[in-house]
Length: 325
Image 1: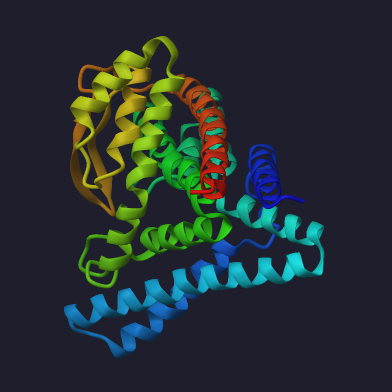
Image 2: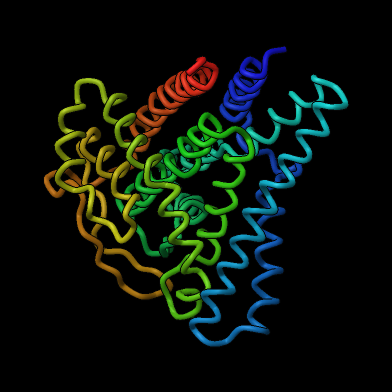
């Protein structure tokens, strides 16, 4: 089979598997293994490195070992699998791509919050939202839970869906796994606080760099998926895309806030400490429980557009490589 056909088949199968079943906990998952490796390495380097400068170097070493090792293992395993049999290679490539996509799992978590709010179970909705966000959810009302859930849905639509698809299209499974390893590092040690500010410096900066294009692409896809509300999404994006500590997160959030006519940001609590974030789309209304349904509908349309556009990108890049000049 043609290499282009193999990878496009694997990517399509992975995408639809992710939509259908999300992230079954009974299946072995490379990201969980990467997380265990990060925990192991962090414990070891903290015994050896203490000063701020040395902790930054330690963080760089963890980044190189984790991301580089993930890429090397992916290349070796796929190479060996394809040598044994083409179908074994295709199955393994599909599985690897499936594990780096998190759109289905993200949707399922958001749907649980929507269901609990719909049944008036605010306590359960708070618990479900806590699995999506790092902020404190115990004291949130319905509007607070809805806002936290929608912000997480669209911020993570870039990291969990569009970015892995983008890197798979641009560089194949190894590139997608590399992004996932870096993104996992950022989510585990990339915090800007006393404990992780130095150790997580290089992982956080690398994640910002790798997420630069996918975040902006996600915002564009959200606007295209917004239908008649695309102008509102575009206006909000242009005005508010800088209103976040992250150089990337406000892009998809601002686009979605404009399309949905909602306001994001504002007062939150993290580990008991009050934090006031800039308001995105200040003219929008406060989110309500029913808005999660419309947020999920927008996410589904964005997901389809992302898959179609990135499959096209993959074909374009492979065709360009094959041109005789």
